[in-house]
Length: 56
Image (cartoon, rainbow, N blue to C red; front, top):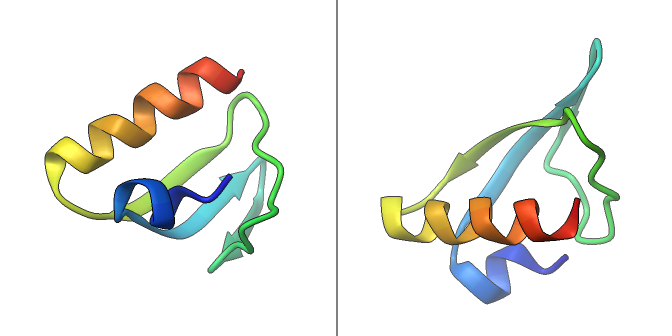
């Protein structure tokens, strides 16, 4: 996903189980249960949430 290009949101980290990936690459595969630390305007963060819910 190219989240930053599509929404302006920056994904700072993704936590999966006990492992945290800082500054994940744009080709990082998102799994159910992943937790995100993101930076952006509320409306843009809501866009990301909708995008992620569609892909899983």
